[in-house]
Structure formats: C-alpha cells, structure tokens
Length: 492
Image 1 (tube, rainbow, N blue to C red):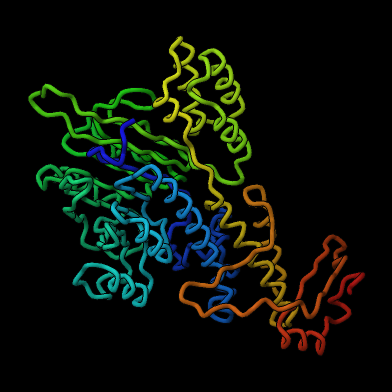
Image 2 (image 1 turned 30 degrees about the vertical axis):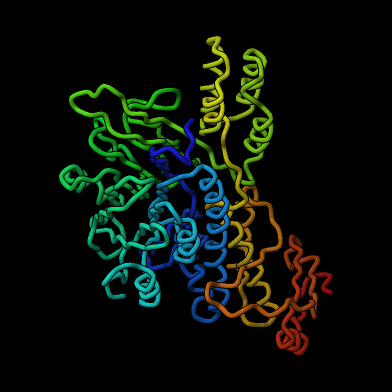
C-alpha cells in the first residue's frame, strides 16, 4: 500500500450504515421516534406521537434524541477510523444521518469530502438551520419537506435536494443532481451527488457533464439497477443502507480478492461495512503505456457491541501477523473462519485469506492488512436504538402512572414486549437520555424521593418498581396513593 500522505491517488470510501431513516410515514408519523413501527404493524393510538408529543413533549424529544445520540456515537468512532485511513471522499447512505450530527460531519470534513443523506426536513426551523450553514442562496421555505443530502468539504456545506422521488416516498421534489468542483490531493475533481433514483435517471448525463466521481447516497431495496454493464468514464460510489445491502465502489482495473469486473464486491444485506479504494485514474483509450494504479485498500466490517462471535474473532485476528509462517497462519485463519456464521465482510475476508494461503503463497503484508482490518464500534444500529427507546418509554410511562397522570397499562405492556424483543441486540441497562440538541443544560441529578415497589400485580404474574425524583410528583403520589383495587399483593 502506498503512503497516503504523499500519494496523489484519491482514497475513496463508501459506508454501509445501519440506522433509522429520517422520514415520515404514510400515516404522517416521524419514523425515528416510533419504535413500534419496526414491530410489523402500525402503532395507532400506541404511537409515541399519540402518547407524548402533545402532552409530554420532553419525553417525545427524549425518544428522538436516543436515536441521534446513538448515530453520533457510531459516526464519531467511524470517522476516527477513517481519519487514520486518510480517506479523501466518504459517502454515507440516504436518510440515515440526522441533522443533529451535521456538526460532527463538518468537523470531519477538514481536508476531505463527506456526502451524507440527512433526510426529510420537517419544519422551517430545521430548514433555516441548514440554510444558515450552507453556501446557498436558497430560502428556508425552499427546503421544507424536501429530502436533503449534503456535500461538505473543509467545513463548507453544499445542499442537494432529491428530485426523482421513489414510489411511496413521502417528500416534496427538489432540484436534483449537484456537481461541485474542488481540489483533493492537488487534483482538480468534478464530484457529483445524485441521490438514489436521481442517479438512475441522470447517470447517462454524467459523462456529458464531465463528472469524475459520482456519489450516490441510497436507501433502496435493490441495487441491481444501479450497476452498469461495465465500468466506464467515471467512478461510482454507491452507499446503501445496511438493511438493504449492495453498497460498492464501481471502478476498473482492480486486482486481488473481493473484487469483480465492475469493481469491489458489494456488501451483503444486514451488515455494516466500509469500502475504501485507492484511485489513480480511469484507463485511457487507446490503451496507454502505463496501466492505472487503482487498488482495493479496505473492505472492513463494522462490528457492533452485540456481535459477540465477530468481536471475539476480531480480537484474535489482531494478534496475527504477516510474518507468521504460511502453514501456521492458514491453520489460525481457517479456525477463525469456522467460528463465524453467515457471509459478512469479516467472514468473506477470512475465507479469501484461507484460499490464498491454501495455494501455498507466502503471507503478504498488504494483503494481510486488507483482509484483517475491521472495526468494532460501541454505537448501535436500528435494533439497539429501538430497544433503548422502548425501555425509555416504559420507564416514562411508569413515572406518569405513579404521578397519577394517566393509566397506560396497554401501552406499557406493548413497549415492554418490544424492549424484550430487542434485548439480545442491546442488553438492558439504565437508559440515560442525552439533553436534546440546543436544549438548556440539564439539572443535576436528584436523589430518589420515593420508591414504589409492587411485587405481585393483580394477575399474579408481574413485579414492578419505579422511583420518583420530582418533589411535586412525589407529593401528589402520597396524597393520592393507589386504591386498594389498584394495588398488588405486596405493595411497599
């Protein structure tokens, strides 16, 4: 691998990310705040909007902030990793990066380009925030209800609004593809951003408009229509959501494992991953004397905290070195591969390494680094976020019931079942909701003033407990305790 600090080759990257789409549903619910929407049915009167948005807005804001905070945590770890890899262009999927993470993206954009799909703009306040940050003469009203993506270079924000909406996409049509000319590693580059379906309808114009690199943030169930019959004229950086898969970099003249005739092998459905290619140039026609020096530098799985098998393999993989004798190294690689189920990027890399070593080739440092470099993160995807939101809602409903602010038995039971469903992805712990963006500083944590425990509920099957920290709520509870019929067999 070349020295990324002196090489003029561009290091181009796509990220297949797992997260919550920042959009509204056909029922006009804000999807990031509706954990029941992943339960297979519309939430109806049990939606977070119905329960909290009007009468308890702080709780509703807290549900959303859990999503933003988890995404920001994952992005921070991921960007630190990509900074060490000297990435020049990084493309994230459509809809998956919340507006609350925009400042994180701007900080990371020093000396590089970041392209990310922010999603649906709900109100004029959000639109005005984007206009204030961006290099644009648009008015806030121009962004309202649009699907917005950003191209950020050295902190400068360029807005891209999607024109060609997918079937069932609940948004207002924007202006479409945007091309920005900029300098990277001393090279002048014309970089286009075409969001999902915009790319499909515009791609034939890319050559006419002299685009060198086309960035495609997508959130599409299939990526097959995005693949040309052959790589030609310009690089395509396709970043899709992990729930759909198919993210890849389409660029010619790649050799080695994990590549195909179009470029890098796509990432499978259900996995988070990073692809990074060192890009020299496209082959010249007629054929030049020197071939382009394009190469795959990274095809790394992003491994979450709940992926125990992958984390264990990754820890042992870090101990392997390219100086280990070939036969001994192959035995170790084979054993690690056998411990992984499925066909994620980590398993595919180990399989490719095993085949390479089985042919009698000595270990190669560049190949070793390519196949053994992967990333563990603490931030979670959809399942982790939804589990935390469900547990938070359960705790808030208990507090409201304790304060005699309503009866929420059906809602509480429903969200409790949802929390249990997602417990495998994120083991239960105390849910700490970060202060919402631009909110005043939180008050210091107060000691519990009242603890209420019900060992046995009326049906004899449940035990519950909650603590009340607010003095007014504690006073109200003591003045109006549960009636005898409301109590369990052993209330305290």
